[in-house]
Length: 313
Image 1 (cartoon, one colour):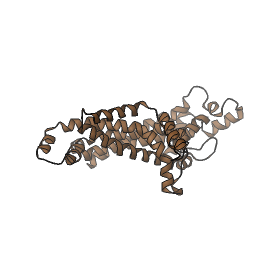
Image 2 (tube, rainbow, N blue to C red):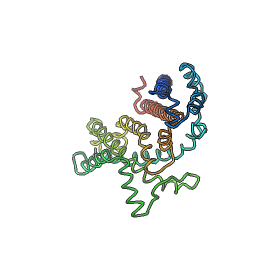
Image 3 (tube, one colour):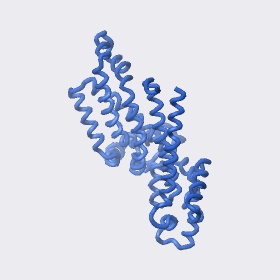
Image 4 (cartoon, rainbow, N blue to C red):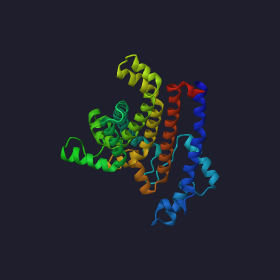
């Protein structure tokens, strides 16, 4: 098991190295003068030269890369061009809303999707199964922003049960924070409920057709025990995989959801940085998002070894 973990950890190093090279070249190899692109159309020559020196764009590209990579390894993602604040500080300030939204979305998606998928497999080819599959199709079809606006109109504007937009930090209380996350978590979680429920159903149907399940049923074991302890446990590898993929996909969904619900998280920071052409922030966020995806994939791989010991070899 230790050797397996070490192999998986070492495999992440070249992936992050390729990501770092891509992020570095994103600005340097863009058409035109990077400093002029950042400065904007109305910038003077002095302003463009100031940005070029500030970002080290006047140095040879190999020297730029090693200086930049050295800063990254020390945890320095550079400074914002417009606010002159460290990128790490800006990311840290926006981290809580994004983490809370991601956690709330996962809770909504997993707590709904897995039971729905299990029930659909148990009641395969019945009205219940067809209703669950219809819900799954709708979950994929409805865009996040549309679901968000509908939820706001119904539950915030018409019923006045929940706040329309914004985020309440945990420092203002747990319940106000949860209230501000209910609608965005549901809007963002609908797609992942549909995805996880479909995969859970398909994986459960395959397992329920196995001989040992028929043996367990023949012994008179309770249906719930057969479904949860025997079937769901052995169907868990594909389910864990799709949950991990869903977490990685949440990164792109967060950008849209935070914009719709005016949540000051990393998604909003990304949109603002792109609009302002604040490339140090964009580069830092791409690295953070990429590292998050790599870590999630690593955790998924490691979970396989616990769920199915045969994978370790």
